[in-house]
Image (cartoon, rainbow, N blue to C red; front, side, top):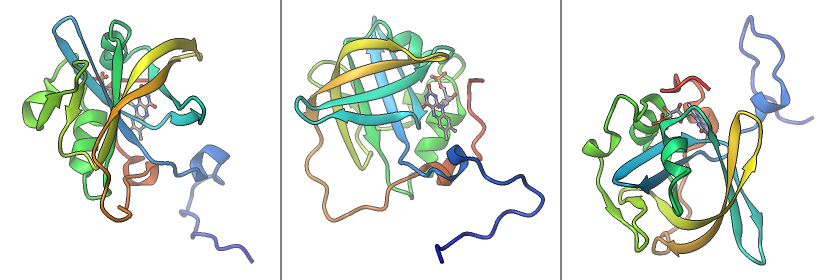
Length: 170
Ligand SMILES: Cc1cc2nc3c(=O)[nH]c(=O)nc-3n(C[C@H](O)[C@H](O)[C@H](O)COP(=O)(O)O)c2cc1C
């Protein structure tokens, strides 16, 4: 018998998207003097040769508006104990709050913001944009990455943050 978690009482059966539990990321961008970043669940490696990674940003987000003018994005993965970073970047919007005031960050070679406390990160050059409905895809070609990670960290995943109220309506 497959292992099942207890269903929550009084809820509908889970859809496929409810049972997925992929990693979540903080994606940052900089353009014309502005920095931005948000929590992202819609993201995945999509090619090996050449290495490519796709990030989907809601067209309503502050981060999207900055990213459209950026040449690069930074994709960060976080450890499970870094919920506070996820709450800041997923629960607040850059339309109202300067998220970068309260976190340690520096610029990559290409000027993209790097959150120095993240578990691991890479910077990707934006190769193209892909219309995806209410999210826009940013196809990234990695140009720079964090030093190797020690051991196998427990990463922050969708289920750790699924109850977070997004800072911007989708
Ligand atoms: C679990 C979770 C996953 C999310 N995934 C995405 C995503 O894939 N793409 C996106 O643009 N926003 C996503 N969001 C929403 C943004 O992180 C959120 O609205 C954020 O406050 C936007 O900030 P900004 O307006 O400063 O860009 C997600 C939020 C949560 C809680």
